[in-house]
Length: 383
Ligand SMILES: Nc1ncnc2c1ncn2[C@@H]1O[C@H](COP(=O)(O)OP(=O)(O)OP(=O)(O)O)[C@@H](O)[C@H]1O
Ligand SMILES: [Mg+2]
Image 1: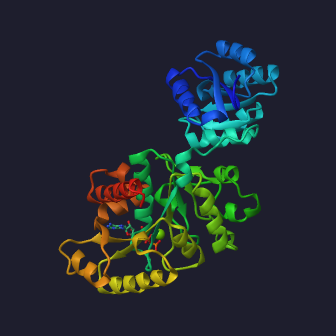
Image 2: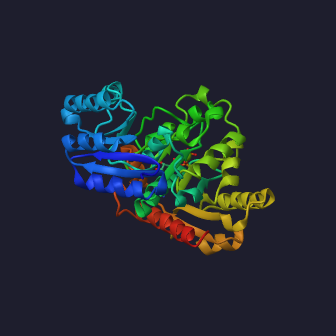
Image 3: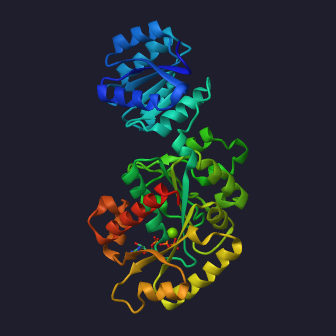
């Protein structure tokens, strides 16, 4: 007897069939692949024979009309089937045609596990024990600085991209710089939904809703973007941020938060919720003095010292103040130092691409990769 949601998959690419099947197997008893086929005709017979709840079918945009017709053929004959269209094109025209043909879900190739699980959950016939076990212990890394312009966004964004590249585990970047966030610019994105769509709908807050307002970037990371309009910032409370981050922790393995300089309600909430705080500063006497004040403040807030990682950005090895000097004054080890590399930083920003895509060999790109690697090492050690 089949268990959970029964699924038939039709895709002309055998590799895709096997990777989706593998992914579904990993979900446990919640879903079962009842059959796969590289041809529509055999797939159709399979649907007839197996009566699956869900059909995942490729929709090739180069021959859209044919696939729209196929959707119609399946749903005409098996109207109770939930049809997930697996498409290679996300233009609004294609999405509209596919959804009008009756598809339940529009999934983009290459299919990610998070998208698949979320779509299966929406089918709602069975509660899949999801997200997969390892995602239930997501880790929140918040980049924060008392002062503006020190490179918090650059480091947060590129750390997220590297965490995903290194681990291939679901990674989300949250732009909590609500007023002046610039993740969209850094990553050349124009998302339909932003964090204000989440906080304006707190009563609907659940995984499915959150999933629907999160945008995928072509690097593979997911992004919860900053509000597009100043007037949308209203009413984002610390409590909202706590709830949203708490839920995100059950959906993503890594959550990297970019914050606005200086403390406010939402960044304080994020700092409290964080598994690791990446406290960022540049090496100068005022910078160090400021750090000292904040380190003391974090102690008073009850934040454990080992949760705080000091990050020196734009470090000049020939500068007046050495790492050891700062460590001695602050009585805190420096987690990492990122070299000053204005050329790469500004060029990747202006191009709207992550550092490792712009110039993976640059000093800056290598240093951020090293930072992400250190975080994964700590993660493995349970830190
Ligand atoms: N390691 C670095 N070397 C040289 N320039 C850098 C480095 N890191 C960031 N920058 C540059 O510093 C500027 C500010 O960076 P970024 O926007 O990341 O800082 P921020 O702390 O997020 O600022 P804001 O307070 O405006 O949010 C950008 O022009 C960026 O390209
Ligand atoms: Mg910033």
